[in-house]
Structure formats: structure tokens, C-alpha cells
Image (cartoon, rainbow, N blue to C red; front, side, top):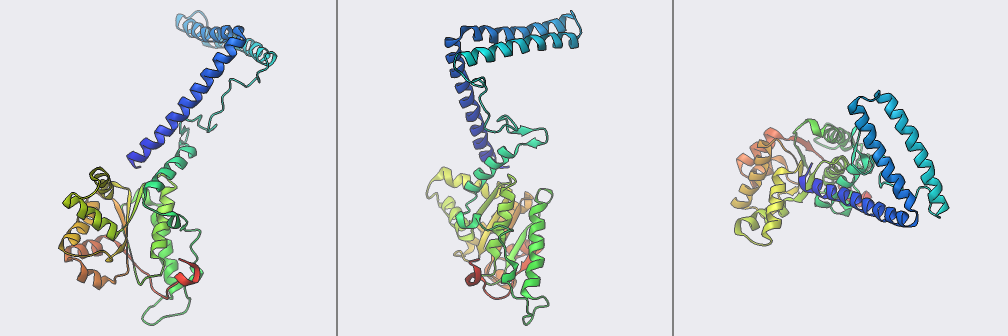
Length: 327
């Protein structure tokens, strides 16, 4: 999980606790002023708890006997407290401030691990930082329509476009489902308008929903970022953070490889990102309109070597489907 996102979510949980504590304190003082006896009851309950612990330590009775005695005493006090609250015009639950999440009581933890409320906030924070716009956030596996791909043979291919996409879709779903247990990489390649970006987004959205960090950047954005870093242009702190994320994020998606302005420096920069993530065993997805031979002509042999040797290559073919359903 991304440290920055975790810190942001933890701040929200701390803020919830502080707001609840402040509201409870304010209500207690209001009640104590109106009904001083309730302050005495609360002090007595606290003192009774301390006496119970002291009695257990001193061995003046069995823990079961002491706990039962304290429970009877606490029940009497609780009944009196409710009666006093009601008589003073307060609700009997006026001092029972509700938690934002009743399941974890705003701790973010449950017996089984992280609470769903914590994961939801983390997913929202990660999505905000992922670089994915609103359109990409709507592109999920459930929204993927396999019927847009023709189920008739095309020249030079063994599988129809639909059968081919069914196979690719299974691989992408498995990549996302088992992401925590592997450090695999995907290359989605083929002509424009065939769903490469949609599949990348679907994987990203699945991972983000589980609290896994994703950074979605076009190859052009990455090239510009690294060029700015080399020549110290722009916001230095923001640039440094984003450059660090390129290497540390759980999943990096490089969209439209080959559309950036390519020279020896951008080739070296892109190799640096790809190779560094391989060495760190961090997963990367690359989408490109280039055919495999074209990648070798546009980029250096070492860049092609890393892709051929360490990426699962998924060739998407068929007719442009964008005008059919907006993919």
C-alpha cells in the first residue's frame, strides 16, 4: 500500500476520533452542569473498576466473584443514570455518541484484519492519486462488453477477435485477482480502438478497490516528467514525488507507449523505468499501438529485450470498436 495514501487515511481516522471525543466531552460537561449526580455516578463507575482490579491483584476474592459484584454495581448505576438523563430532558442515549463505522468503532480494524470502511477510504485516496480520470474509473471488468468483438474469422489469425479477446480477458482478470502473489507484467498491443486502455483501467480499478496503489500515466507524461527532472524544470517537490512513485507504486500502467517524442534520452528514460521496476519486482502494464517488430525499431534492443523476456504479450486485433460503444 502507498505510504502517502495510508497516512492520509490514518489522518481521517484520527480526525474522526478527535471529533467524537470532543463532542462527547462537550455533552458530558453539559449533562454534568444540569445533573451533578451523573458526574458522581461516572466517577463511581471509574473508581469501582479500579477497585475491582485492585481486588483481583490483592487476591481478596476470585476474579469471577469480583467481576460479578462489579457488574451488579455498574448495572444499578447505569439504570439510575438513564433515569436522571430522562428526567432532565436528555435522551437516555445522549452520551452514547455513534461511531462513523459501528463495525470497527472507527479503529479501521476488525478481527479479520482491515475494516471495509478503512479499505474504502484507502481506495478513494489511491484512486485520487492514480492519475486516472473520471472516464477511466468507469472502465471495469463488469462494464467490458465482449459482444463488441466480431466472432467471425479474419485473415491471418487462428482465433476470431471475440475468442481472442475472451482469452485475453481471462488473463487480465487472473492478473488482477492474484496480483498480491506475483510480480508479472503485461504488454497489450494492437491497433487503436480495440480496448487496450479499457482493460488496463479495469485491472487498475479492481486493484484500487482492494487498497493496492496504481499509477496510470501515458508514455508522453512519463517522458516529460523525466525530462523535466533532468533539466530541473517545474515544481521540484512534486516532480520528485511522482518520479519516486514511478518506481515504488504497486502497479505502474504506461499507456500509449510509442506516442511520446522519442530520442536517445527518452529511450534511456523509459528503459530506466521499465528495468528498475523489473529489478524491484514491481508489476507494470504497457499498452501500445506498435507491433512487436516496431517496438524494436523505435526503441533500443535492450528495451525490446526486457519486454520480450519479462512481459506476457497480449495481441488484440479486429475492427475498431470505439464507435460501437464508446470503448
